[in-house]
Image (tube, rainbow over all chains, first blue to last red):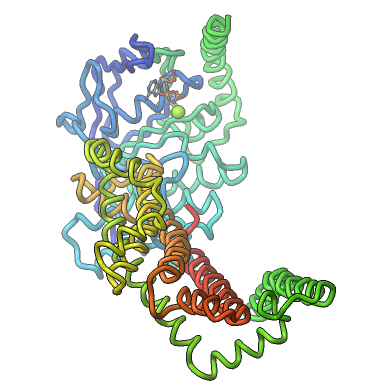
Length: 269
Length: 257
Ligand SMILES: Nc1ncnc2c1ncn2[C@@H]1O[C@H](COP(=O)(O)OP(=O)(O)O)[C@@H](O)[C@H]1O
Ligand SMILES: [Mg+2]
């Protein structure tokens, strides 16, 4: 089978903010205002210090949270609730442990009007894409972390979403597995173009993956820097161009880290 | 190969239990040798084994055991049929939980055994009264474990469910909440079987003409300590066997959560 030659949809984030009600009755400004335009099929990586509102942003994009202000448009349509058109890959995999590997990949296909046979075919195709065709009938808890995340990636691509949202998807994996999965993700994405919003706190990961890197400031997170990465893939993150860019990003990131520590220092006193 | 490893593993787990059983028998025999009690107070293990064989051969023990088990199973199933759905709903709906929880918290401290007199008054000494007592004993462990199971569902699984096609609360409930709570439900069912098993024996001690509880009570009336001990051993062994069976099912169907 051939997947639809879709390139995803453009994403428009306009003056988005989010505050949480704190327990003491006040509000905590977690994010924004943030405005980002992502082209159809673009791979955007957002880097930022911990606690700056990255997960909040992703949950807003997914529709798990409602914005305090601002708007999110996908292909011109406002986002109001979670949708299969915006698939998510979670850091903790979020696979369903009562289902087998292939049933997990099929989960998202149930609502599409497909025959059981066709569903199986699509799921098998995507399992093959992540190299897990021989594990189709295994239980989730028989898999390693890296394999679980590959299943989650297969589950996300299988529903042919317009946008793929990834929140530190490789954050829980060891360095080598991480390297492997970064490569696999790029390979699949180059075959099946989707708009990707990928969150990480690893600058190296951003340099390896992104069409465009956005740097978030510390809480409430705003876009503090933006870089287009034009180097051909597969990239060598030790090339002099990459290292120069890395240095530039770290210069800004370090300012934010200093502020984060400042905030935490204040909170401690 | 794998099967051989499985059997060896099973033997390794069974060994401590065998050791415990043998130790109990040895200690018992020693007590009998040293204190020389009247056989009507504490018969030697050998006499109880003989009695065991006799009660099996004449059909009394299998009949009473089957009756007790049938009562527990029917009451436990009835209890589960109410407690599992109720627990799933209470775990998912704050409003329902707020309404029903006070009833649960007020009734739960009343031991099922305390219900036996009312059960006799209401239902007489027929089957219904005993089933009622077990039903109460089994109800709360199932209910509370099910509620805890639903509330303990990892929120990230709910998010995953919402993203991957559960666009109504009902479909999220059916496709994610219910299966994700199953390990806790199975734990509740196992615990409930244990409390139900304890409750049925107590109910039969007080008001029955059959069952293992009756066998014990009857043994005491005719001063046959050996018969009482046979009944007690049968209760212990059956309780242990069913608990083991449930643990096995738990490992088989209750994936690690
Ligand atoms: N549900 C919530 N209620 C209140 N505060 C929250 C909630 N979720 C996150 N926060 C706060 O919002 C800030 C941003 O959190 P998050 O988006 O998780 O950051 P990141 O993913 O970048 O580490 C943090 O200070 C965090 O404590
Ligand atoms: Mg986060």
